[in-house]
Length: 207
Image: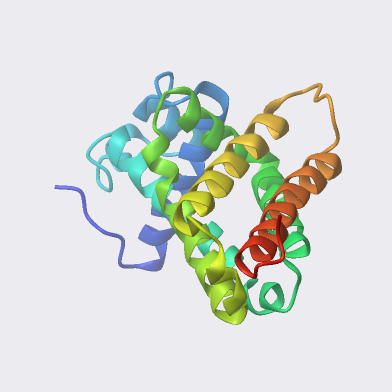
């Protein structure tokens, strides 16, 4: 049975396997990655890898957990500054932080996220959308007027999932038709205009 790392040396090997998993999936995709590929990239034998993980799926699962933990920590650190911003500026800040996060470490997270979308593993990204939903609801707590928006949960779902898909597609395109700044400006304007219009309508100021 695979064991959990306890000593510093074991933790280092465990982390090396996870890092190697990201490298291999970014280069080969999940279907093209084997435990031997991961072991070779980690600089260990396959037998040593099996001391920690039963198969590559367990490695992929742990990789996803680490990705979720890191993106959640990055986004949750933004709650305080976001709460003080107009909605369009808040959206742009989150988009730019996500861009930097996905492009970091030789785009390993971007490539793995793109792979998840490509092979239909959208469920792997669900925790990310959940974190974004939590942050959106915390923003609403600081801006209670936003609760007047009709179909708020539905629109949050559309904006969050559509935004993530748009970001991944744009960053994955070697020759995008627009800059990331233009994309972020457009997404922020879309959200901002919708919120403004809804607040006008629900306050009786609309036509």
